[in-house]
Image 1: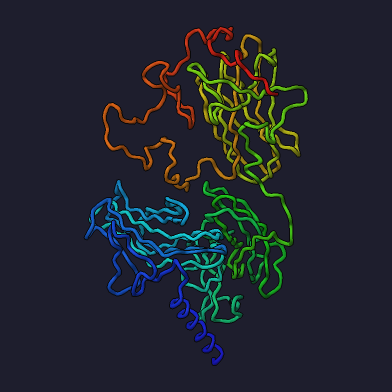
Image 2: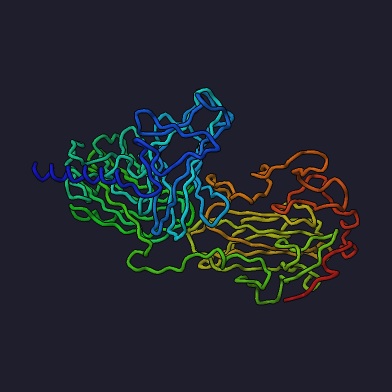
Length: 582
C-alpha cells in the first residue's frame, strides 16, 4: 500500500507540474488563455466563469461572425503532436450554414496562413482532434478561427490545446483523452481502459507495461460477453495528418490466445483496409513486443482488431504504442518518389521509355495561335505526340512505359491529353497497368468521347498487390482513321485522387472549379471578371476550355472542314510545324 501511495503521489505531482509548465502553443484554459490572445478585429473568445474552457456563441454575435485566437511563437524542432479538445453545438435541425472551427499555422517568413485542420460537425460531447506537426526549425504561430453558423444556440468551445513531442499515433493510455484513440462500439465486445487500481473484468488482467504497476493504464478487450462466432472489437487511432514511414511498435498480452485473432490494419480515407500484422505465436504470459513496418504517405488510421471465437477466448491487452522513423530490424526499402514517377517532358522523357521497335511517341514543341494551343505546362514548352505523320501507318500501336511502382499502395494518376482527327475514339488513347511479375496488362482507362483540340484532364485511382508500371497506349487502326494524340504533365502520387478529407488550397491558389475561392472584386459591372465554363461567347477570342480539366460546353466544336477524313486540310494542324526532337 505504501508503494502504491507513493506512485499515486508521483503521478499527481507530474500531472500538476505539466499543468503549470505547459509547452508553447498549449493551454488548458483554467484561469486564462495562457499565451493565446483574441485578435482585436474579430469577436473575443470568452473564458467561462468557472474556468475549464473558452467559447463564442450567438448570444452576443451574429451568423457569419468569427472569433480568432492567436498564439505566441511556437517551434517544433522534433516531430510533435497537437491535440485540440473542442465542441461545436447548434440548434436542432441541419443548418444550411453550420458553424466551423479552423486551425491554421502562420510561419514567420510567409504572408499567409496555412489551413491545417477544419471541422463543422456538431456534437453533444467534447471531441479531440490530433494533428501531426513535422519537425522544423521555422517559428510559427497557431491561429484558431471559430466561425458561427446559423441558429439561435450556435456555439463553439475549446477545452484544451496541447502540443507534445512525438507522433499522434503513439499512446501509453495514461491520460483521459487516450491520445485520440476510440473504440468502435459493439453490443457484446469492446475495448476498455484497464488498470488504475480498478476492478476491470472477470478475467485476471495484467499490470500495465508503462509503469509495471496496477496504477498504470492499458487497453483491453475481454471475451466474457461474446455471444456469436468471431465477434470483433476495434480500437481506432487518430488519422495521420503528415506523411510518415518507419516502424510501429506496441506491447500486447493474451490469455487463451488460441481462441482469439489479433490483427492490425490500416484504413485510408476511402475506407480501404490493409492488414499489416497478424499475431502468429501467442508468445509468453508477459508483455510481448510487436514490430510492424508502417508507411502512411497519405492520411490513414491504424486499427487494432480482436476477433473471438467464443466466450472462452480470454482477453487481449494493449499498451505503449510507439513509432520510429527507422525501419524495423534495419530493413531498407527504396521509398516511392512522386518526382521520379512524374514528367512534364520539358527536358526529356524523364523515367518514361518506349518499346524498342521504334519511336511511337515523339517529343514536340509548337507555336500556339488561335487555331491551336501549345503544351499544357506553359503553352510554350514540350509535350508528347503519338500518330504523327512520322509514324502513322495502318495497325500502328505506340506504347509509353512509366517507371516501376511498388506494389500494395494506392496511387493517383493524373495526366492531360488532347485528341485531333480520329472518326472513332475507341482505343485512341488507353492506359494499362503492367504487372511486372506476371507479365499481365490490365486496361484501367480509355478515351470514350472527347472534344477535339482541347487539353483534357484525366485522373485514375488504382492499387495493385504487385510492382507495376503505367503504360500509355495509342492505336491507329487504319490510315483513314489516324489522327493525333497529345500527352503532357503526367503525375503519379500516393493516395486517392478524390480524398474526402482534402483541405482547401492555400491562399493565392484557385482553380475556380467550385467558386472564386478567396478572390474578390471591388465592383461588378460589364467589365468585371466572370466565372465561366467552355468557350468564350465570341469566336477566336478566348480558349476552348479551361486550363484545369479542359472541360467545355456542349457547343464546343472545331471548324467543319476539320472533321474531314483527310485531316491534313485542317488549318493550323500540328504536322505543319512540328519540331522533331526525338
